[in-house]
Length: 289
Length: 289
Image 1 (cartoon, rainbow over the protein chains, first blue to last red):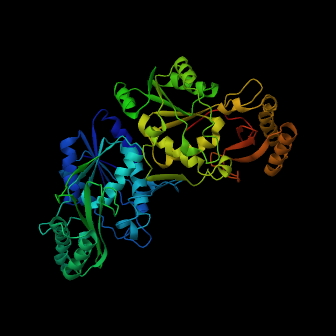
Image 2: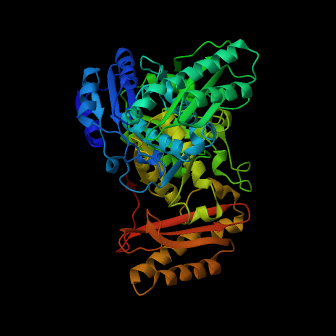
Image 3: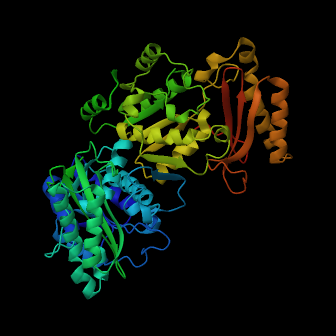
């Protein structure tokens, strides 16, 4: 595995691998099984696996946890190495943002609900850094986890709207044994928070159950899920929403898939999770665009 | 020469030309010697020459000449063929904008002066369509004419800010024998307007002469050029500006190059022209990024 820190080094390496298919896993590091599952899928499907680790300041709000976001470069290198990564791209902030950007990118739809409501500008930062990373890495397929389902929907828009010659592979959320979605931010849960956090996933399953049972309105389902969360967790509920997927609209009439998504603010960590299912309630774990 | 109208057809052709260097000349058609000079430079420098013709609705304001913009597809095909073009890409509006864009791109600096003052949103439309065309064509080098010097400055920002793996070659403005810059819009000049329009370039040369003579302030130079234009043309002066290039700032202290640019509104055509020179007054005709 080659570790490169500059775009120039990356380009030099890339020239040596012409005509190879490239799978790309962009991450913010502090790698866990959610990330390694993506690396393993990319390893199976592509000639060359590129992973980037870049905690992107542009997607953090001024009061968010950019400084506190967990980082452990040495550990990440070992994990990437073990999972068959060919090139680990570790740029610093000055490499990605050498000067004030003149071009600004923003997203109009799919970014006014769920996480975007309380994180204004977050997805603008996401699509900006991904556009840059896509142009640097030039992958054939980009791999994302469906835990960040809204991010997947936004990236699908980015690729489609701007004609990026890139396929999108959205892979299943990886969970702890008790169902808690793997997340770099889980390390910031207290022992008691960690214990009760399994109920976030239970709440999603309960919501899907209500949907399948069929005699519940959308509004009723989200109310019931909120009640469940209030009883079984101590975190502050940021949102519980049942929307169409990937369009993320409240009106679900003609769309094929639905997403039930939740965000909970604990003392030191904001956790998100979701479940995507079709009209028959069958869970969708993998989506490719 | 292959003529393709869809992205899918283009992609099929592209697969047949792997590992060839690609030169790309994006145009709005109604081709003239300004465009063919770019094709010829690309022909000399690259394996494959791709020209697109697309009158981009996104870069026209509601009161501008999108509907009236001159079009002649058959003539353009013949001209492209004669100039060694390999692939002529002629998408229609639905091919480039199949649905409402979710991602929005805008430019903050370099687009608040000159043409952008009276064409709000124009350069946002330019960078959006170019991002799409760059992603479709994936050229090694994109060729632009310096007649649209502000566009060149904006595209340089786009490529740099978003890390497009593309070099920019800005080639000399091509002029009629009397000095009038070649432009698709020149066909809309009346006979008398056409005759006097040569004075636009004369005004630029006069401005440069004043700069070289050295005892004139920037403000004085633009005033003198405006006076010259008022005497020698009947068109409405949209702007005359002397700025740094490519940053397009009024303060010229440390920059290497300057641009003296002018826009004149005639009855049916708005013409632009410029001259770029260094601090010694030496004219810069070609710029590569």
